[in-house]
Amino acid sequence: MIGITAATGQLGQLVVQALLDRGVPASRIVALVRTPGKAAALAAQGVQVRHADYHQPATLNAALQGIEKLLLISSNDFNDRVGQHRHVIEAARTAGVKQVAYTSILNADTATFGLAADHQATEQILRDSGLPFVFLRNGWYTENYTGSAAQAIQSGALLGAAGTGALNLAARRDYAEAAAAVLATDGHIPAGQGGRAYELAGDECLSMTDLAAEYARQSGRPVEYRDLPPAGYAATLQSFGVPEGFAHTLADVDAGIARGELSSASRDLTTLIGRPTTPVRTSVAEALNN
Picture 1 (tube, one colour):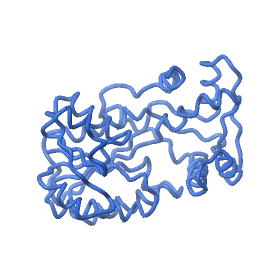
Picture 2 (cartoon, rainbow, N blue to C red):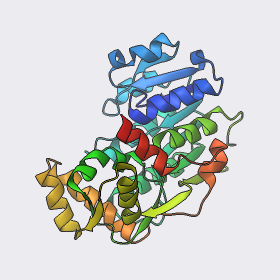
Picture 3 (tube, rainbow, N blue to C red):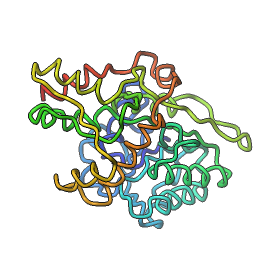
Picture 4 (cartoon, rainbow, N blue to C red):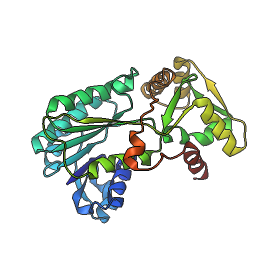
């Protein structure tokens, strides 16, 4: 049995589909969700749906019974994410889960931006748990930018605080397929032998200036990258309605990009999915045509 936390989220749904595409029977997939009513489409495919709330350990203990492999998708609730992850890991150990795969962040062991700290702490909890584990250190999603591509094109400017830093982008479906590849592999990591960290980076390494140029190329309109100081970028994001805490988080990540902390020469992602990662130009085209 394979359990997927946050299975109705953007990444979780793609992981479930990738498992099905790999031939994993729906009856072997368990969608662990906070709101079971939102998982009707998964249930209709024959996927088991169980109530599992990161904030309610009692739901986790019941939901993880019989699960052999668990994908712990990191919480998008920034209020004590480490505590939420700890609840899942402790429940997994109690339930006898044989392997936990965790969606961490690229270069988690060396990254210094604040967002990496939660992942570093969760990785340590897994190491200390005694559970066999796999760290899926996902790079930045192309969708983190293409979701606002139309606005950048309309205004003629892509804003950020990444300087000339470059990063390796990949599409969300690439990371989902990588997770499915790990979960669908026969066998388990032997107990007591630790685990493995996959550094999952897109094949392309590009700067914000490069991304702005791609927006311009595809739209036929001038788009430039405007670099701001991190504090100024956070303030600008807040003026657009982004909550203060999240605005500062995004600006802090950009500062990490400027330091090269979201770039990598690793080809673990391509190896796992058995194909090149989705070109950024493809993701931009998809966003502009939707």
